[in-house]
Image (tube, rainbow, N blue to C red; front, side, top):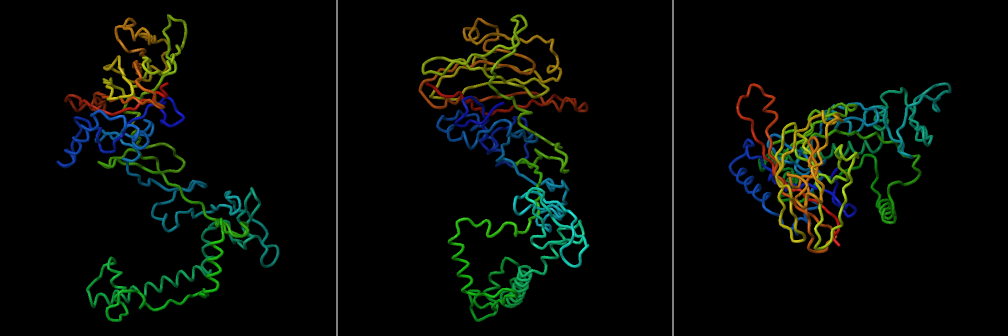
Length: 485
């Protein structure tokens, strides 16, 4: 599998995404305007043009991705990276009870589970509802409490005892309804609604402004002392539950300035438990045509996908093989590939394996971009990848074709197909001769790869008797070879 090129990796293959729609299919249907088509043609020319090595180092982090993280839009036939897609919520669910929450009730429930799912304020473990003897009223009565099986905390420490074991969230909301914070918030809402109604009535009579966007002008003209330009003329607000004491506010500000850590003040066992936050499944769309690329099942317990268009299912996967299956005549199952250290002025063979994920043949063309740090020769610049078939995974009697060893292929005497080291099933391993010209900590080879294949969906449509459409994709791949001594 290809991996990201970081400081710890020596070998890896990343795919380049310019995030401008440069990977165009020549016969793809055009749905954009003339300006968008011209922009796509310029982007395609930019994609096919050789890239400078100084640009590669800058784009290695921002615009190169492993093929496992790329998507493919089959509507516009373009590769898409995580920056080229639009994410949309496909469903909400509670991670604790796996209850599917309707989208309409997510906001009203404050993005939290409305059932009996709470986090412990001490150890953040999920609380459970247990029936215990009540500490309030006469003895012998039972009640329900929230209890933690890890730290043995229960809601009786903060005075929470519930009448029933169901609808805990609703019972907590009723208990909080009589609190001072809720009353103060309701008082603030009433105050500002009165101010808005007064400002709206005055502004309509003087300026004729009725939209909510003009609320600022309505405030400045409400009350209304001539040409007032501030909100100082608003009537004073009277707190419903709190007394504005300047001395207490000053002490509170000093305590905040002196505190180094503010997450918890006091004993955590006296804190209220918080409801479990909802999780959501995301669907992804193409940013250009809004075609769905990823669409998961909406049910929480189902991990399947309705639609899953990954680049690994449409583009060839490029990897570094550690070993290749040997032919039966050699009497061994695997033949290890000897890696030659990269040295300045010395030619080292590099083996790359291409894997075809499609059920149709794929013609592959490999070209090397301009590079000052090394000279690279592709011994097999043109080859055809056989189609993928499940039978090859189970057919043990099929003879593997090891066409030539790297040494024989480099001299041209190993096989008629020069540069092809191994071919088996839908995989072909080719050889590159790399000659470094200067020392570097990480040598990266840019490869421009063009893939051509027939549309396999047209073959499934028996009603269409026209010629199958040929799909041509061009993309850049960056091959990291490690340090040059």
